[in-house]
Length: 232
Image 1 (cartoon, helix red, strand yellow):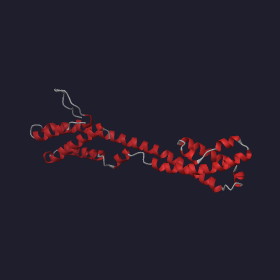
Image 2 (cartoon, one colour):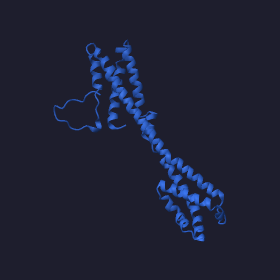
Image 3 (cartoon, rainbow, N blue to C red):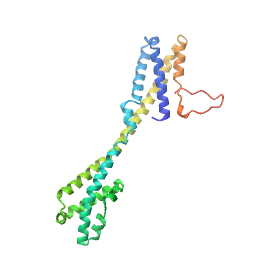
Image 4 (cartoon, rainbow, N blue to C red):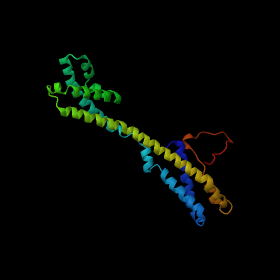
């Protein structure tokens, strides 16, 4: 949540607290009672401790897992690259030499996109020269391990994007709940409370006070005579 959203949530929580405190005054008012229940459900969904909010706030955790996966791919690719480099010297193959001239340290420093491209290219060369590489002691399992490392890396490369999309969806739901709660107050509860203005002035005044949104993170000194915060 940003500062504005937190301020709105604080207003909703305070307003709900006022309604709960004076619930006995509108016990027979079924419409107001139902509206209070709907507001309570929305406030519960918007609570920062809710599971949805936690998912929306922490969308990048898998990046730490990908670091280890990247190291594994760089290691597997470097092992195959070393064998291909030796073969390139033997065959005097300049292109193969250029494509396989990588150390593990160099590969680790490559971007995700470049590392994946290089590893796939190395696997392709190794597959094409599998018979010749066998003479250097390169076993089929090494190519299998490289291919597995490539697939794992590809899978984890897409995971943060999926979680970011999920985080955006969660934040969209939060905004939707805030709009729904605001509409509930304006269109129903505010109007219901008008009937309590004269018979229950303390209740009505407490409600009106609670309905003011105060964004504390953006507060500053205001010139005298500036209007008070408007209701949300």
